[in-house]
Image (cartoon, rainbow, N blue to C red):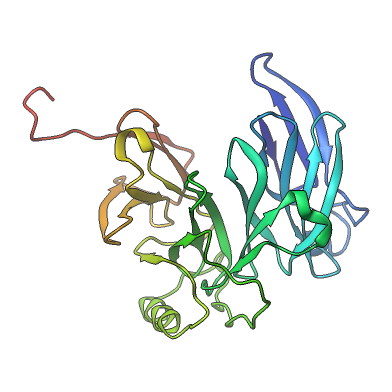
Length: 303
């Protein structure tokens, strides 16, 4: 298992032995002292990291540094060092994921520059992505692959989730439509602003997304989204946390919000996880709660 904090370090933990094995650093020599001027704006920090299925490689997305670019880095877990690094985005890389967990070749990144990008780490030296996905009007908070080598989703500060086809992307650098001008850490978009986002998306001819889903709230933190599990739902749904203290579940095909799970006194739900073989969802929120939601079919007499 790996985890990171607001630092240039990634911690490698052995679950079976229940102990830390090593600390890997993505530091490229920039200022790292929290007391140093500019640290919180230009210091190297890890915002997202994933480890390959074989435990050999770690892919990490970092913060924007003094050269106004954010790095996508590949680390060798055994050698404890960065083996490949490129300037991948113009702003913080908040999220990374493998297209296929069993293969570490293709990686998706999402950034505060509003773009999703697809990378082939076997051709990293070219410094160019395989493709760019245009359409969001706010920074990305999460990307998640469907694991079918075809689709992925992204969550954004523009208050939408988008479904993308990996085969439909742009290979040219285009002018990005100005992002939503609201600091999501301090404020939320009003209903009027969200309606304006929807209208701008309708007229954005560069938007190559398959579908867009609105209803949940993205503020305070990097809200995560996921596909529902294949075994119990055939991945028919998308589900996400929300800053209004709810879990929203969307039907992929209709776009309808088919369910909203809410606590009596809800706070921001940053992440949630649907059990792969049973109808249970676990959520974590800003009040420090870990909650388990279970589905009961009222049409069955034995439940």
